[in-house]
Image 1 (cartoon, helix red, strand yellow):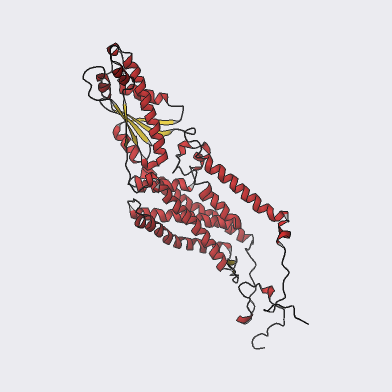
Image 2 (cartoon, rainbow, N blue to C red):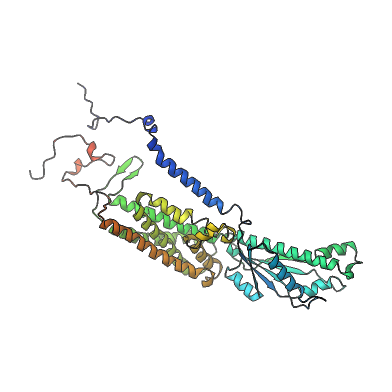
Length: 459
């Protein structure tokens, strides 16, 4: 009789039909629900923060500088510069712009520390130059200068510039009404009256310049994103690699499947191992990120040693957080950490869209989400001469908080599981058998043909 054994000596196993599996509702339930929820939440999170920046403006910080030293016009208590500054602050929609009336030196300092998104400067000769328009002494149009701050991001600087330009234009029209209503201009020719109707020229300048290889103020955001992704992906690679090496997870690469013998180790010691490996590997990933961005691509960067130290600590804080979350939540930990460090962090980072131009929910997240803190630190180092008050101090503090939170949360959960006796996996028994009797990489132990047990050595 012909043998029904396979060429390798195993009885063929009956294969389950794919159609039969697809008709099982429970097979569809979990991935469908999770995929739908992730798609819905990500769409709401990412698009909700960028749909309407102008409509969501809330106290966007902008400086107003009144340097006008001219005397008040007849019948006026204030010169034109003071009137314009007061009207600009009063005319802005309620709560949309956080105007700061400061001197020129303070405005420059605010721009250099990233505390304002732009500034509007009324020059010292403003009243005199406006008054001269109605006489023969006029030599040039009065000007109001709009200062941008590209270091806070192209969109934030652009929003502030638009606000300042619109405010300056409205002030020009208001002054024009006064000039055209003056008896001194009643006999002026139509061309002169057209000029007097909108007499002020608006000049836009860069208030705090940054390097040409800074991505128009976006290099800080993308560099921060690289640090977060390096910590997130590196942490998960360490997590999966250690579990595979210790026999708590299978390894499958193409057609090759392996399952190592289980190493007896509790959850707490496993977490220690993963965190130490994360700390070591983060040195490599951080260095390569800097080499790629600065040495290869030529990104403008100063304070290189400080940038490396900050980058390493930022990457490590994320990696330790990933290990703690994975230790606490198990197989869904990677999804949880993805939301914590990426899904919720990106739209609340304030690096592309200012938090002052996002709904209140994102401003709430920005108070503690890691990417907001890290991007402020990177921005301070790259654009604002590593000033502590430009966000660097807060970034260091939040990195320290992240370290402590990851350690406390991770080890509190693993110690709790260990005390409850919640072992991750029952260790596989190790049989004394020759090497040739071990199963193949793609062969489970129970798949071997049954037969007489191999004699013990020395039997």
